[in-house]
Image 1: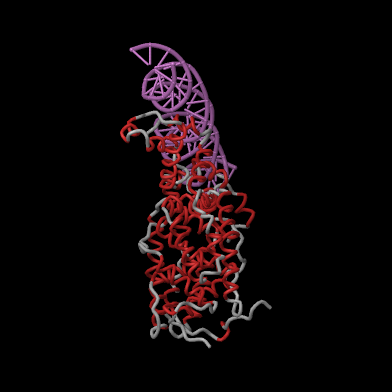
Image 2: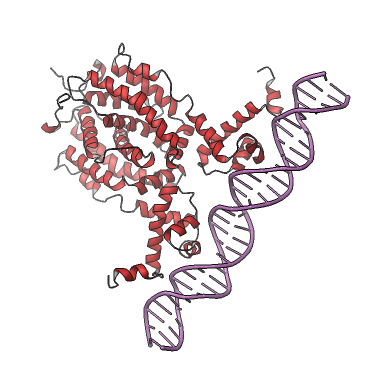
Length: 216
Length: 216
DNA sequence: GCCCTAGCTGATCATTTGACCAATTAAACA
DNA sequence: TGTTTAATTGGTCAAATGATCAGCTAGGGC
């Protein structure tokens, strides 16, 4: 910031921190596109540096990939989601809509979904840890909230919530893994899915979403 | 048939057809496990043959992978599904349950899901073609059926059906890609998902689908 | 303007990997 | 049983790839 922008562009030598950041940025983009089997040479070429320089900052390709995973997952899990989900001052439906709007906004990115899927195929432990977090910190509390709202009716199970979750995630998979056309705005689809879900457990919806038969 | 089983095991030289089959079988298993970047040498070792022999049957690794794709996709798409889906002599719910029981039974396999996902990440054209078939031959007719059944109520869109489909597929993804625990029998989960879906469009369900009583 | 630290590069090594071929040998056939 | 055919193999090549290191040089400090 103190340097002029041209200075930033022209200088070939960067401070270690900045260079490392730049490498990880390029690596995230590169490995998301070509897969985790991409080569260090191609990555270096794309980053505009020599392949040898990568090994100045990372001891091995595996360590570089660890940095990529960390970067991709970092800050994708907002710490305020658990609080949002359990805030009974707001209607449950509104909480779920807000949560999935933010959640899909956070992870429906080309880089995140592709690297996450590639890591899953590669058997990376990070995947399971991440999904354990999703289950324990997000879906489990959400299940409690839904059960409370439906306390006089049928009770959902965790598998039902995974089903809702998966249907939403599949939108991102279709878009970024399979490269299929998807709606620009995913929220209407998500909103209808949430309404069907809540309706399935006889949880009252706002007047606008009432194509269902009136219940006594 | 005419040869005893021990003869089959002992003989080192196989007829080209049998050898080719055996190679493709081993390749499906191998690439599903280690990813499409697996090496021909490791594959040969696992198949109990020399690496050179692979090139007697396939001109290149890419051609071998094509055979793997063909094998994996072959006969996974039952030709009777479109007829099943549009058979209005049977209740819609029953058709959907039957279809998804057979469909999940066909594709919820370690090999199929992992190779399909790896092919998607690799940008293989086969993926999009397969999913185009799913959309055109299965989901589009199914959408018509649901719209007909809900003709006096709110009408689903194709995206809603993709949502249902994705929620179901996600079960297989959790199991085989992420290696997370999932129910042994997926049908109860699928059945509830279908019931929520149909209920969301005010399509009558059988009496048995009445809400269960709260925690027994 | 000069120095000297350290960010960076070119060259190189050891393996790995896809692909090929001449030589070998199992097995069908007479 | 002997002959023939082709399925199979060991050996090898060229290119690709992860990793290393001595040396060059940009650029901040004096």
